[in-house]
Length: 119
Image (cartoon, rainbow, N blue to C red; front, side, top):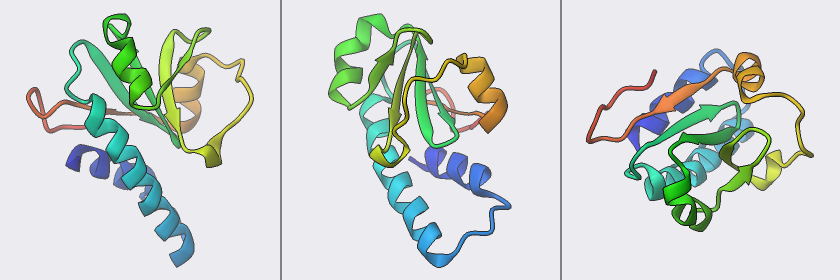
């Protein structure tokens, strides 16, 4: 979505990336865009780009099957779903989602039917 591209651009702004690093970021943004396209119109959820991960919160229980089908995983300690490229796989973080947002920043992705804006 254009919303995701905008969020990526804001997050990458100011980074001094090589051509190879830029190509990798573009590949990842396409991968993440495809995931967002599968879930963006689900009712009651909040999608955020936090660092190199997507986090989904809100009313996720009714749409848990759709989130799982889109490749997301549930983080029970954070009570939120996440998606990340295999490249960014880590062991369980003890940080809260708010602490992760504070460290990496957060950009919300909104459904086209409500808004074309990123917060």
